[in-house]
Image 1 (cartoon, rainbow, N blue to C red):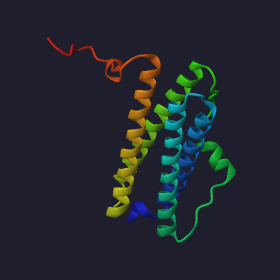
Image 2 (cartoon, rainbow, N blue to C red):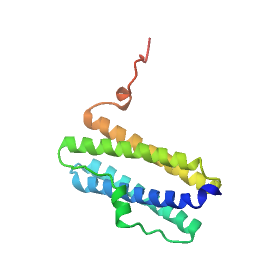
Image 3 (cartoon, rainbow, N blue to C red):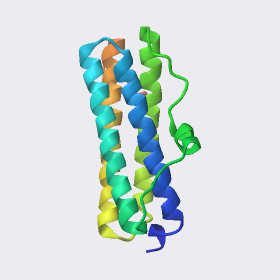
Image 4 (cartoon, rainbow, N blue to C red):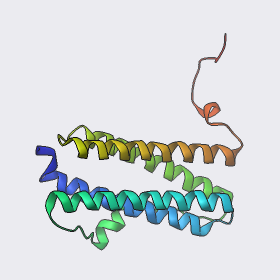
Amino acid sequence: MGGETGDFRQVLAGAICREIGARNFYKTISDSIKNVEGKEKFARLSGDEEGHRVKLEGWYQKLFDAKYSPGGKELLDAEIKGVHIGEKAGALEALDLAIHAEMRAEEFYSNQAETVERPELKKLLEQLAAEEHGHYELLLAERGSLTGGFYWFDIDSSQFLED
């Protein structure tokens, strides 16, 4: 169980901080925008990230018999920074940051799932990767709706769909 001790303690701690940062980021967006549908989507994303935090803290407690309490600096380092919401450009900037963050989160959980031996922990990490991918897809669709495009038109491809 090499991936579940020592370094994995730091991995879980970092993941918990990332989930708190993502939760706070999405809550800030939800609180800042006026569009009811968008507000609800970001509030739901915030709730999803809170659920991830709870799962991860439960595993931290189970594996290390200790409650994880992040420090201020750890949380500040995990926040998605530099976003001012207000005008349409601000919303697009926030979406771009969120899309990138969800892509990195999916990669992080997928990579960690490959390092653990415990089946239920592997399953949790794979599930979190899948949920982050779902967030990524949702955010891409939201961005497409704001810009008037469709996701599949945004894919960089030099091939035609039909001959």
